[in-house]
Amino acid sequence: EAGVVQSPRYKIIEKKQPVAFWCNPISGHNTLYWYLQNLGQGPELLIRYENEEAVDDSQLPKDRFSAERLKGVDSTLKIQPAELGDSAVYLCASSLAGGGTGELFFGEGSRLTVL
Amino acid sequence: GQQLNQSPQSMFIQEGEDVSMNCTSSSIFNTWLWYKQDPGEGPVLLIALYKAGELTSNGRLTAQFGITRKDSFLNISASIPSDVGIYFCAGQLGGSNYKLTFGKGTLLTVNP
Image 1: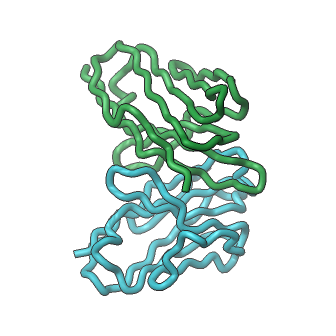
Image 2 (image 1 turned 135 degrees about the vertical axis):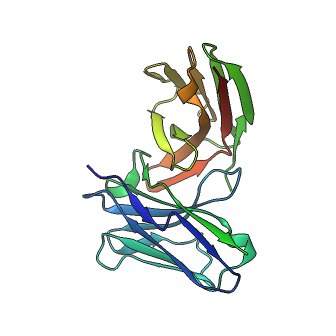
């Protein structure tokens, strides 16, 4: 069974440019998460989806970040415009409905470098 | 907000040695989890603990859920080179609060 798939793995852009990351969760996993991981830190939740509904986006900086999961399967995270401080790894994860057990399945991440 | 303090930040050990790391919180959690992250990969769940005082093993790994619900530790016995990576603890309140709070991680290096 395929795991969580993310693309691109690496992205280098100049500040003020837009960038988008894509995630395809494990088949059958209704809950999808986007996490931000800064260097030397643990992952921090940006947004959580239950099917196509964003049930927690309280940590998402909405002035420049947006996300969508239109058909309740794959998802896109966008940053526009990117700032130097956005350089980080963006992790997508999925879980069975609700994520109540705490068991999340993470993708390999998308490493963003903003110059 | 809630914060988890992991220690040590990093460890350098010889192959075959045992390792112990821990995680403390200023507030309680009802679930404690330990994840491992290899370089260039996403974190992978190692052990999940759902009951205060619970001691759970997964191969050479043993983890405990502290009785106060404010701490947890992870032991690795007879370390091998593939144990290298970053170990994260994570806490979850549970119920309607599904959110995981991660620690900053313990970087483990194993010298063969």
